[in-house]
Length: 469
Ligand code: 6PG
Image 1 (cartoon, rainbow, N blue to C red):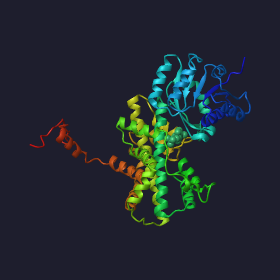
Image 2: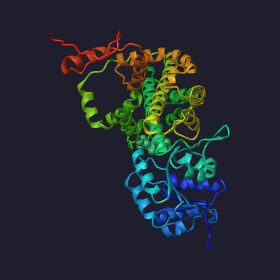
Image 3: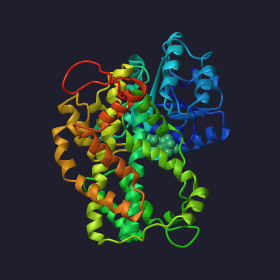
């Protein structure tokens, strides 16, 4: 009998190739499939030993080469391609086989696919994979949900390939249905927020502190040794240092300031609106990518309006405030994303354990950060914590840094430097911590023009006033 491989992977792009090589490195035999012969050949060559890792462009050969129950993971672009791959696989696979979608699929698509495949006896589940190409190769954070039975069959493989934080694998079963894809979507929303914030602080240090790329590199690298330790701060410091291979100076200064997006950040914001959960630090990060895309209009508008002349600050002073403000706004961004997860868990029946999610984000993924160890502890101490801001262990962290966030937002406003992520984070904090907001007036206005009624502070009931009386 031909060799039977432990694990199958469809989609041998960079992520797929790296993931399957990681599986093989960890002692499991793996078989890859891709329509593209070049990708098949590339994997065979890189894998070296065909008994450990092999590949084929033929789907039937691929499926026959897997031990039962078959464990097949798809790492293909989200959307129609996932449906097409599933349909092409169905004639070949059997009841009891396990099919995993490792892409950034929209969560309702995962629910639909799970229901469809359940009827056919296939254990299907979505598993978000984070960490980019290097993560897939050396240890990603994996966020599986859906079929528990399906997950238990691949658990040893996933635990072996996942990143490790102090020996613990960054993978855990997160909950039923599309829980895995949903958690990955919010992970990406947080990713958008943190990226926006780091780019704002870079802008501020450059414009209001006259930081050179070398100084930025040194500052971010120093920050990465402290409480801001995180993948995004670390790679930013390396980006500032990179010389431009095609011209003079640093590469960062030649990169076009238009940020693209594949949609997961936007989905996070759209769904937060549906749930009624405020995530302004993430919303503005999506909006800023949209504003960035309007480069030609921005150039025209720039010529039409004056900007205040920027007053520069002492480097040491601004660096200290920037570190505090970035730490503060990172906390606000995680708080909002986790708040959304807690609410979505109730709404969609995901039974999410927020501490477990923070735990598997401590290594491997794009939003990994030292802060996540504290967040894990905060939710371990109180699993029903509605918001990180209510955790006793975060009060001092926030109190000691909010002052710098205020100073920098004020400075940026006066100097015409956009800091929308930081100011939204601050506004979120000020609003969330206000026991009284002026929305009483909005209720009065709604009742005035539309008889929408209002409630009162001093007594129970629903009231309406004839305001023009
Ligand atoms: C990850 C990333 C990844 C995502 C890219 C691109 O966790 O490894 O989130 O899944 O696809 O970061 O996202 P955008 O193109 O939307 O920026």
